[in-house]
Image 1 (cartoon, rainbow, N blue to C red):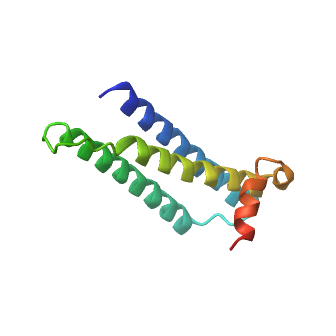
Image 2 (image 1 turned 90 degrees about the vertical axis):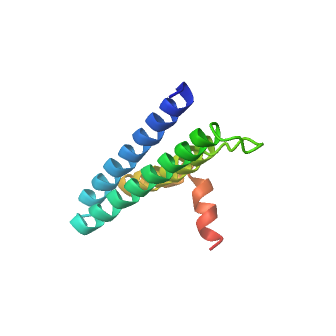
Length: 116
């Protein structure tokens, strides 16, 4: 495994763990702790891990089989999963601390919700 794969896996793993922890804190503060919701969250994290693994595996094997072109999947998949996790972490933090909703960086997410 090269540094890109290791760093990508560590980054995605840390973000998934942070999202899970902030989700638990949000549930505790809102008095909505629910084991079914926790299992659902873990299932989502597991599915992200599987998608990352499949992307790595396909990219790794495509290097062994001459397809005539490169098939870079790992980095785009890790970036996509990381952006999903970052968004979820920020949403959790706003529910934990509503004062953050007025911050300029989080206005990006507010505008996206208004468009719906």
